[in-house]
Length: 268
Image (tube, rainbow, N blue to C red; front, top):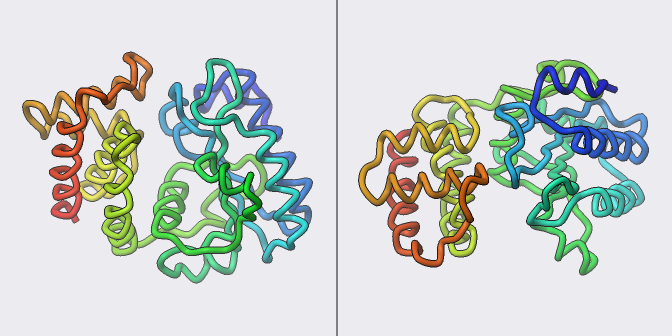
């Protein structure tokens, strides 16, 4: 397990966040045991530093399917460890934990199949008795593609030994397939949707994954007028510089989302 000093040399995290990462790692090791091949930290923690509402993103690779006991035990422990959304200052972060079978990764099927997924957006379903089961989703292909570029091992070998590069064709297809649901979720989640669209646009144009705020900075230079102002509002809210309030910018957010969706499609 990495020391706190090692964490500080590769990413911007505070002591309580490091302790939460280590607790999540221990939970994965305890419940998955010998089938656990690797655990990787990715996302904001390694690409640009955790922002005020950034999740802690973990990706695990296992040798075989999980048992019902493993699923239920892992779920209960992660619900205890993960902070609820929205995160509070110096409180526990929201955890996003995805588990993939090695055989599925090796096949490079589209869309990717996750063995187990935990995220705070699913807490209500979990509290109602839902258990994470294997499923396919275009978003999982994007997660694997980004992790392949940036993830660092907390347990197991370097990422290139267990993860597989996702083809540009599958990355582009995943972004196209994700757009309808993303746009449907705009109301009430304007900041995240607009920044995700900016990141998709950047990835479609360059083939690289960057942080949401970096993607927004890139996209703002390619927008004008109210579009640039609305995206900058989302960027600054993500960085914690202003209040994340869209009550007076609903129409601007909708118009920007529509135009950036077209830009995403045209960039591929």
